[in-house]
Amino acid sequence: MDWKEVLRRRLATPNTGPNRKKSEQELKDEEMDLFTKYYSEWKGGRKNTNEFYKTIPRFYYRLPAEDEVLLQKLREESRAVFLQRKSRELLDNEELQNLWFLLDKHQTPPMIGEEAMINYESFLKVGEKAGPKCKQFFTAKVFAKLLHTDSYGRISIMQFFNYVMRKVWLHQTRIGLSLYDVAGQGYLRESDLENYILELIPTLPQLDGLEKSFYSFYVCTAVRKFFFFLDPLRTGKIKIQDILACSFLDDLLELRDEELSKESQETNWFSAPSALRVYGQYLNLDKDHNGMLSKEELSRYGTATMTNVFLDRVFQECLTYDGEMDYKTYLDFVLALENRKEPAALQYIFKLLDIENKGYLNVFSLNYFFRDEIFDMVKPKDPLKISLQDLINSNQGDTVTTILIDLNGFWTYENREALVANDNENSAELDDT
Image 1 (cartoon, one colour):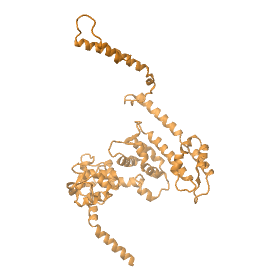
Image 2 (cartoon, one colour):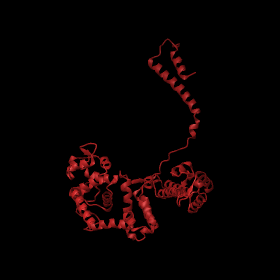
Image 3 (cartoon, one colour):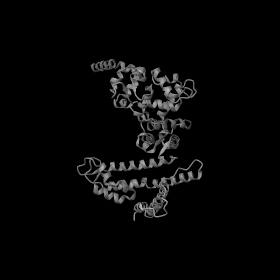
Image 4 (cartoon, one colour):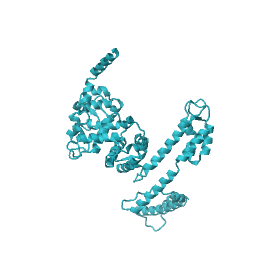
């Protein structure tokens, strides 16, 4: 019988005891006793029918505290063993060569120019012969992803092989970065990334000429780009996934190429010439040689045309030490000014322009730097203020920020029509000659 029904009947039974009628409190106590009894029996019965809950594995393990040295060491060693096992699951050079041999052997004619092709049937045959490590690459999904406009329904062997190489490289790099993930949480702190790049330097031939005394400055220069663009909230850590997704690691590892052109080196932030250029500029600006930059020293940056109001904002908002800027803060400044089309750079400059810290630029803010025609260029949603998103959406962010912070940029914008006319006249004169 259901316990609720028993309880109801028991309470409905008239009192057959002594003539004394039970008090309301006694009735409540008796009701509670009965409820507790029957509820306990019911709960016990449920417990017996749910023993399988005991088989659920533990899924949360707290991180060891700083003073639990043995647990920390155990965790580090177990992670290292796990990453080594993952590394052994990847294709090595010999296995990649064997894969290329099999693909070439099973190509499906005719070729497209000099490019060998393979159909789905031969693709599956290669997958069977290539071994278990290659199984993940020989799927219908991968084939369809690489299938384009071939009338025979084939894919390019070279494109497929490059796809495999890229996947292997990504996994190798992820494992390599994870070895520096001290916390084991899937992200790198600034010190972790510094250690990774420092140990990477000897493997990059394009950095052979760097003196060891410059290594710390080079590492600081390289790491700063990752954190400036990938850590917009300034949390002090970057997801390994974000590092792999961006192009910065490709640019850094491009320095393995011993024949990298001079032009490529000049445009690569991580190259030795680029790092020496940035650091050399910093030293040249530091007139008093105290290792820091004052507002007066920074005013000579570039063409020495930055406005005073903008420089004031830089030293109000950026991290300084006794009113002077260190090299790390200078790097953020340089990265922002050299990449003004990028959202992270616009965010940096926007914060400086937002003098009232309202999250948007109003007429007062812009009058403080320039004039109202900025609104005509950006065309914001709200006619009285410009948000960061408005600035990004307008595709005029680099022009607007240049006008607001650089006297030379202001002059160029003001005289743009005369400059265009002058260029046209010069072009006409050259054509006549």
